[in-house]
Image 1 (cartoon, one colour):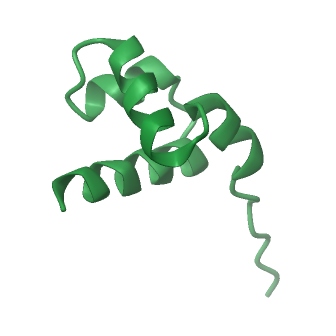
Image 2: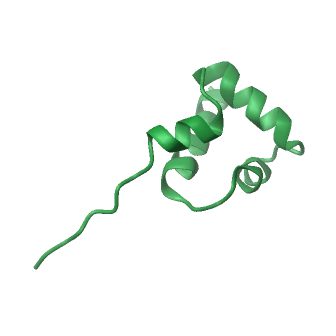
Length: 64
């Protein structure tokens, strides 16, 4: 359950924030960026960079 929550937060940060991957790993308490990347790829079959490229949030324009 904890792993799923960490992955969900990582996906949210990758899609909606302009933080680099090392900063996201550090924010999620991974002391080593390589370990964060291996962890993410193991459970999603994508590297964090691949995930970011395919799931980047598109800004929504609100018109009044």
